[in-house]
Image (tube, rainbow, N blue to C red):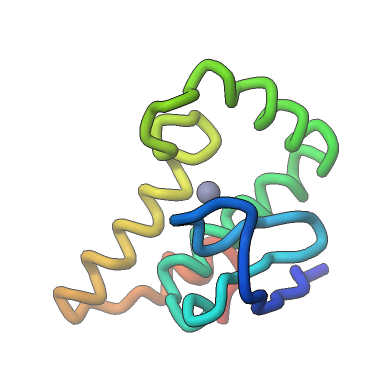
Length: 108
Ligand SMILES: [Zn+2]
């Protein structure tokens, strides 16, 4: 199964460019072509698929109060998604192939 990726005009929060809401990944207009962001969301999507969608969301939400007002990358379920996203951004800047990173989240 693959996520259904959609572009929307607005998301729930200012500064949020994408969100994974099983079985969808929603992108704010203008951000869907950002391959590093797509990999970030696909990472969440696969995480949810592995853990079970409901347990994943419940665990995610249960941890939110502990990371309130902290940078979102500090949330334990966000950290690895951001690390992948940053790794892709760095490799793109350096002109290095990101094939392995994309394959790790099932992106062609
Ligand atoms: Zn995320």
